[in-house]
Length: 229
Image 1: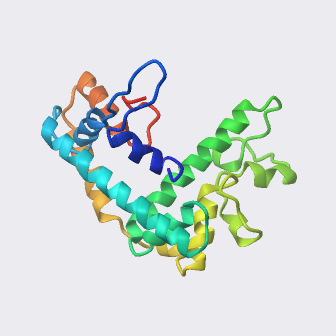
Image 2 (image 1 turned 90 degrees about the horizontal axis):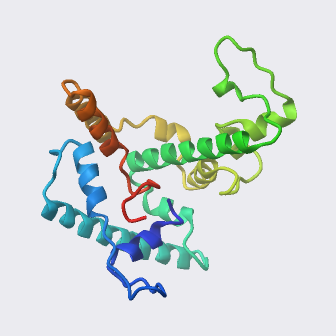
């Protein structure tokens, strides 16, 4: 999410792509935004003009965030923007931090599962993935490497971004006086309202309509299935 921040900004500024086979094209996320609007409670076909306005606003906010993060990075003497710079800017918005940490935790879990599935010698599953009827059979030396929840690591040696995105962020947040309990204690009313609205919309949908709505709910700026790819 942090690594793609600048690339998303540049892609959406209608800059020309210097592909050797073409003179360039304008890139827009309007179609994806329309899907997200529908998934968040708008009509199935949101107004094009509204989606275009949202794209402009989001782009301006992302560029502003990137410049502010660069200023923070400069103050700490860093050569490039890092996750800690964005986290520092978000420090007063605990609800947004909670959403970000939850998202990064899911990314960590996905990476851990991919490593397990790609391994030639598939190890025993961690406790969080074991069926209820199956006893835990995990070797001590593999337990830490396989555990999807990496919170324990931040209590010991420093955690790298590659090892655990969530752990790395929590480690930094603790340095500025925000711990995981602070995040867990926050009620994200906006998110709960969105989930409630989404649930209400699905009550009377047919199977085909629900499938279409589900695809819209899956739309995200972080998705690998964006129409611009």
